[in-house]
Length: 444
Image (tube, rainbow, N blue to C red):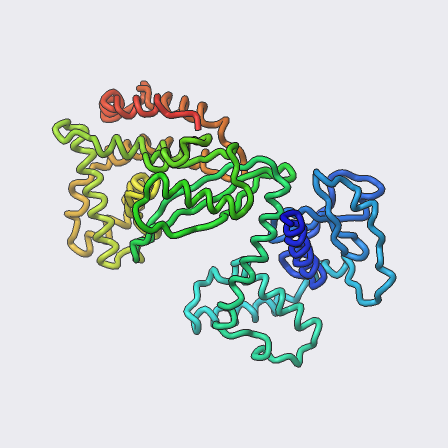
């Protein structure tokens, strides 16, 4: 019975894709198969929303045929093209883009500008994948039924759209589950976070795997975490989500932060610490343990306080628009924002705009206590950590092999160089805690 249900789900997913292919849906793309043979040359790989599927389409009749590592070419060989049985069958040629006059796009851009103004929508709405899919569907409807169709007869109301959300979710979920069944091993990243406005706690679970020699990641679920966020609660929530998608396994590897409840939740699995999170913890730990009685440390503490006060003043006084680039505020929960804050202030100082604005307002007191030399030295100290975090924070390429070289590079950067300033030479030897933390950076 379970096998029958599984086949039924696969059929639904295939039929869903087939309808998209038949209707020239914009989310569907075709790519040539890498391996050439007498059979494969008649088919093209099908991609949906930029991701590979387990199907190939006949170039003549567009019928989908399963083509994956576990099925080989058996389905392709059995396929009998029925292109001659119907006159209205679309061909690959129908997918070729046509060039439009520049005036058409200009008029459409005017409409978009007015839409954003009337409906209070962000300009970036026109770049969304969902919006482009809807736009393409409207074009296809116009091409099929002519220009006499009224837009009011096509567009649904908000309530109708809301009723369709769950159905669309189930369709996409079936596609993801079908894809997951074709892969053997999975890694999972999970993180707890809080929505600031309502103070609601959530947990997000993302699965990572390799398909057709490409790294793929899918956010499986974001669920509210009610009650105490204990290790048992976290483990049960994540296991239910993975079981729901049919990939719960003792071999699953989990990459998480170093929260004691999260680490304890996955103690029975392979659990690795996120290297990017570890780097952030190192900096957080060091700056929280600066000694105010140490002259160098006290100057750093004062620098952070004064720059934060300056940025807060510019935000509250509405002065950001007078700058070429706005000042960035340091946020405790966001990685490397200390550097972003210091860098933005330093850039504004170097341009002269910051000084001119405060001079006109008789507010140069906000700059009097900012040590520009120390500011640049701290920026240079923090930059390698920012670069390391960006280097390791990618989900499209493997980064496990980069952790040890990154660790070695950070350690080498903290060694004293001949050209270092007096302040840097004082900071580095006194940053023994920083050195100790980096030395203990795990291979993750």
